[in-house]
Image 1: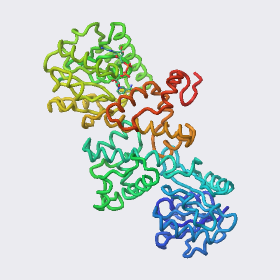
Image 2: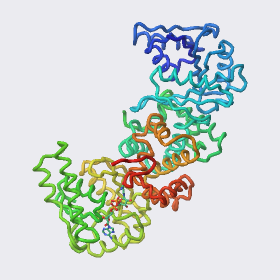
Image 3: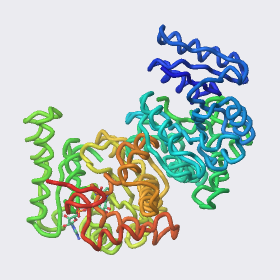
Length: 267
Length: 285
Ligand SMILES: NC(=O)c1ccc[n+]([C@@H]2O[C@H](COP(=O)([O-])OP(=O)(O)OC[C@H]3O[C@@H](n4cnc5c(N)ncnc54)[C@H](O)[C@@H]3O)[C@@H](O)[C@H]2O)c1
C-alpha cells in the first residue's frame, strides 16, 4: 500500500483516484475547489467501502507521498504553479507525474527543484481496449523515476506505452489531425455533423463518434491542445481549423457548456 | 424502382460479389458481369460462399440461401443487362476503365437506368463528365465486406439528377443498409479521413517514434480505433494502400495523402501484408 497525492479532482483526477483506491492505495486529494475534491472522494468511498481517500487543503498535507500526480487544467500557469508546489513537498525518492499532453515534460520540469523526478503520465480516455497511459521522460528525468511511473501505472491497471517527449505524445498527436480534418469537412459543408458520426462509427467501426467525443472532452480543450501542438511543430495538420475558434468564441464548448456540435444521435 | 426490377453488378471481385450478395438478399434479381464468363461465374461462387457462411452463422436459413442464389445470374456479355434498372459498377479503381465500361452500359441500357459507381478515391463528377447522361450517375460507396457492413456513402455527382439521389437513398435503405449522403469528394469521408491517418502512422513509424505494435496500441487503446493501423494496412495490402494514397494525393496535393517512402520500399520488397506473408507484421499461415 502506497500513499498517493493527487492534485486536481477533474475528469482525469477522479479516474486516477478511483483506480488507486481500487488497488488499495491511500489517496490524498487536493483541489482548489475543496467541494469538488470532497465529491470525488465520496464517490470513490461509495464505490468501495474499504478505501482510504482523504481531502487535504494545503500542499504540506501531501508530504510523504511516494507518488505525486498533477492532473489540473491543461493551462501553463496552472501546471507550473501546481508542479512547483508539488516539487517543494516531494522527497528525494518521490516521483512526480504530470498528466499534461501538449507541453513537453522537459519544458515543464526545467524550472523545478526536482527535474529528475518529473515523468509525463498522459492518460487517454477508456476504450474497449482498456485505458492507455503514455509515459514520457524529459531530458532530465531519471531512469528510476520512469521505472517507478511504469510500475505505478501497471499496479492501477493501465496499459502502458513508454514514448518520447513529443508534444501530444503519440495517440493524441495522431488523433488531432484526424479531428481537425473532420471539423474542416463540416465547415466545408461536406456533410452534416450527425452524418460524420454515423460514418465514423458504422464505417470505420469506432465506438464513439468523433463529434460526440469532442463534445464530451471539450471543444475548447481540443482547440487549445491542437493550437499549442501547432506552435511547437508547425505541422499544418495541427493548425486549428477556423470553425473550432468560432465555436469556442461563441461559447460552444461541448457538453459542459450545454452546446457544441448539434444534431448528433444520442449514444 | 420496384422489387422486381433487375440490378446488374459490373465487376465481380471483392466488392462486386459482396454488393451482389446484399442486393440478392433484398429480393432483387442480380445479373453479374465481368471481363469473361468464367469470372462472372467465379463471382457467383463467391456469393454462394458468403451465403453458406451466413447459414453456418445462423444469419439465414438454407432455404433462404437457395432462393437468394437463384436470383443471381452470371451473364457473358453486356447486352444481356439491357433491362436492368440499376447498374452498379465495381470494376478496378481506374478512371479510364470505369468510364469505358459505363459508356458501354449507356449504349445497351435504357435512358432511365440509374448508374452507381463504387469508386473509393475518384471524383464521381469526373466519371459522370465522361458519360452521355451524366445526370444518371451517382456514387455509392460500400464498405468491405459489403454484404455485412451497414454504411453506404452516397455521393451525388455535381450533374446527378435529384430524383436519382432520392431513388438511390431508397435503394440503399431497401438493402437494409444506412445511406449517408455527402458531397462528392475524393475518398468520400471514410478514405478521406482514414488514408492520411494511416500515412501519418507510417511516417511516425519511419521516424522512429515507436514500433508498429506500440503505435497500434496508441491507435486502439489510446485513440479509439477498432483495429491497429498496421494490422489494417497488412489486411488491405500495401500495394492497394499505395494506389489509394496516390490517387488521393493526385487530387488533393496535400502531403498527408502522399504514400510515405516506407510504403514504396515495402511494395518494392514484396512485403504486401497478409497476402504475401510479411508486411508490418509476419504471418505464419
Ligand atoms: N476493396 C475494398 O475494400 C473497397 C471498398 C469500397 C470500394 N472499393 C472500390 O470498389 C471497386 C472494386 O474493388 P474490388 O476490391 O472489388 O476490386 P477487385 O479487383 O476485387 O475486383 C474488380 C473486378 O472487376 C473486373 N473487371 C475489370 N474490368 C472490367 C470491365 N471492364 N467490366 C467488367 N468487369 C471488369 C475484374 O475482372 C474483377 O473481377 C474499386 O473501385 C474499389 O476502389 C473497394
